Picture 1 (cartoon, rainbow, N blue to C red):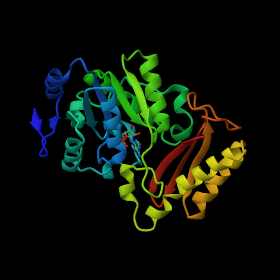
Picture 2 (cartoon, helix red, strand yellow):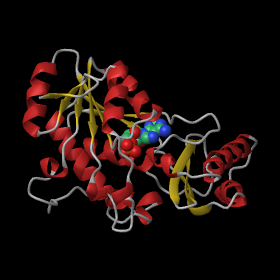
Picture 3 (cartoon, rainbow, N blue to C red):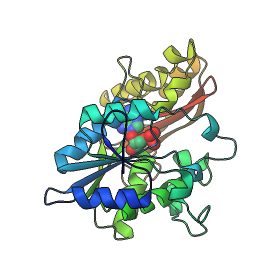
Picture 4 (cartoon, helix red, strand yellow):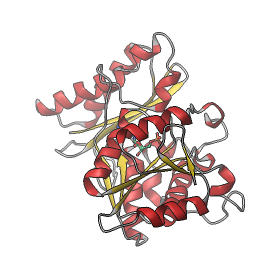
Length: 285
Ligand code: AMP
């Protein structure tokens, strides 16, 4: 087992992980926070949330090739392991699992995978074929390798969180999946590793997603239930600054079914390109 430069315990192989887990597992429970690294306060808030539910917290850092499409940003996904380890050490994580691709997939790309079914058809699933299958497959493997009592995901990737929770329930993983609130920059932009790609003016433009969502939420509070009108508010706000909307959808918080009329608890979700960078965000009405 290795120690990161910053001192937090690091496991890079399955054997190192198993040995580290033997030392960690105890009566107080084990929490898991899966990430792709290049950590920010959003990720670190999940470490805090996991710690509230479990005595020990494992964070995985793995940029999972299976969930990237051929034209997506796998090759230029931002990485800085030393910085990540220092942040996790400071935040009190107990163990970081950071496998190489062939440690995760020793037989190559898995033939048998976990599919999202119809919950993967809408929202991001419609634009990222195979994405959620890649996510669920790696998360299922992490659940088996770590055997946590609770796993914490961020509400920023809302469809992902619902799918993981559903997978755990329907496929009998003995753990709880918690969804933690979105952490934002001061101007409202949802924190994301991909924000590092926002160059020049695009950084300020990126805040339009949350501005639009907030305007729609205000309109809902003021009595406007029509999804078409709420969606137009988001679309207009993003397009005003040159962003390109991929989708704006109002969905049921659990089933992700499309809604024509908003109700309290429904989720308004958006995906848009700002410059070359694809961003997602959502609010609960
Ligand atoms: P990623 O590294 O982008 O795969 O994200 C790892 C986990 O962090 C996922 O559960 C994300 O939903 C969560 N996450 C990412 N950004 C945020 C944020 N701004 N607020 C809360 N959770 C987040």
